[in-house]
Image (cartoon, rainbow, N blue to C red; front, top):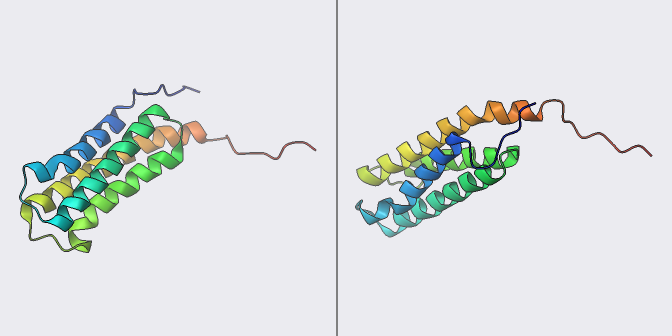
Length: 124
């Protein structure tokens, strides 16, 4: 079984970049308070999940968390009602989609690593 080395999975670097872009987008894109907070919070959380996944590439839960954050970014404009703010909505859509795709691309290798590694009860 090949072992994943920390800091080498390019898909997670892509997610980190998407999170960073989302978090910084309010600097150059017209926005409002709620939209600014949404993109900053979800962007920073996506960035942190990507970094955690890079540092601990064998944790399936972190990979899933990164994917969930991508989904939250993608649906945020509809859920929070800022689809009319074109720049911020497109930023959320694109950063969310990029995170979802990068995570989906990385998941098979992480899941393969976990195949056959079921927890068995200790012998009594």
